[in-house]
Length: 452
Image 1 (spheres, one colour):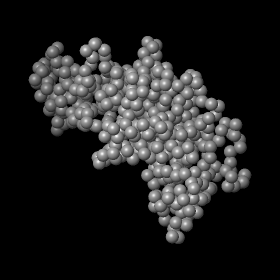
Image 2: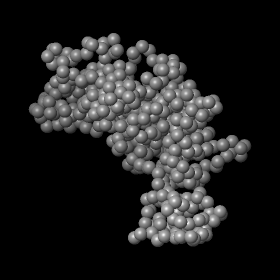
Image 3: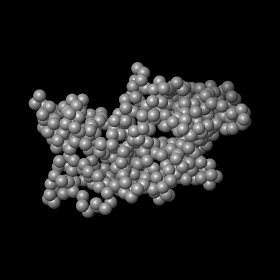
Image 4: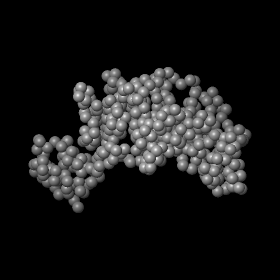
């Protein structure tokens, strides 16, 4: 059905609402496009008492209500993923811990979308102030509507609780820096591998503040665009079997590099990978001072011949090789870097997050999302074992090298522990393990298990 055309007509409030409802039935997923359709594509004028904002509010009523962790909101025409809820959970837990330890919490959500993440910071993390920014001005009606349902704009003392703006994220942060308006936590939920936000964020972040960064560039982390990863994060990334962990380390490494230029030191509190997107999210703590020379910022190698991985510092460049072969086999070693080679999580911090999640009943209950969050946090704690190296080993790789059927994950982990090796699951790959056991020994143990 084609929408009818109104020409040389002045719409009243009631008739405009009826017409918008008519269009909405044909375009339920694009309500924000309807206001522009009215003003740009229809030759009609609207009475002064019917503003664009009021029309957007009319459309907002038609939007589907969503609920996340007990908060009701609308998404309108903004980009929104239910699967990202756990990433938002992690951010809120970190913000809550900060508020409990510091007593004050000011947050900048630089790319807020429909505003649900900002709303959760306000309500669930009890932030004193949240600046919600999104470059798309068409989202304003949805964001403001979501906020006004749950949080007053100002306290009784006239102190603002939140503000909504629509500008480029870098511009917002630059202006905050110039005004010396600093934040305790900055959340940058960016798309692709855009790392241009790092330095702007450091400028307007308080010392000992938190920076929650994002990448969705799984293609570069897979080693398929090394020139692109080099330009974005300063890391030349080659294909490796644990590419999704490389994506997290590439993101942290880029943040470390830019922070070092400004005289700051950053360390990851937790690192989270989700397959949808894919999405790489890291919570960083920013403090004064640089990392000790070469510590946790170097190169990693993978040997396609034996399957072992190693880390190398800068002064070892030119000496990179695998102990399994000789010079003739040197081409089998693949090197990526520089990137973060240290721990992905802070054990103590993630344990505090788990305890807080249980107190909030976000973990330890029977609902699927609570079980998923609890399982994730427990796995992150296990991954934080200092004996465990970077990377992970997929059991499919073990079975392929051993030429046997893939052993059950739990049985393989139990066998490795009996042999004295450290081992844990990987939150990144369901059928993979993190272990300090060499691939050759993993293959040997898997063959022995097959004979039982």
